[in-house]
Image (tube, rainbow, N blue to C red; front, side, top):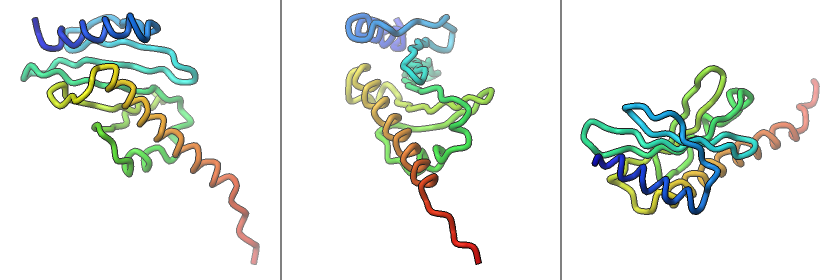
Length: 143
């Protein structure tokens, strides 16, 4: 049994008990992936096989096109995260990803998902606050 298969079994056992709304996507030789609709965003959890045998865990939010024109890139860059954060643009959709190599795990799989979700939501909250602040600024007086 590969280590990624072990993590897959752990995740499936945990989500069946605590978050049964996750749905398995078609497996591939390189990864296991599950999706969940969490209004207003879609969440994904992946276990990616690596050549060294240590899987990498990825939690992501799929964000709609308007986020491409937001301050999210700056927010992710300045955010101090427990995980590796990245942004991926695919077909006018933005994917905000929290990444953790399995060998660096300090919590359960659901602990990772909940902490990563919390950090992603914190970033989205910062983007929303900044957008509200920009809209409410008074116009510069005309000369």
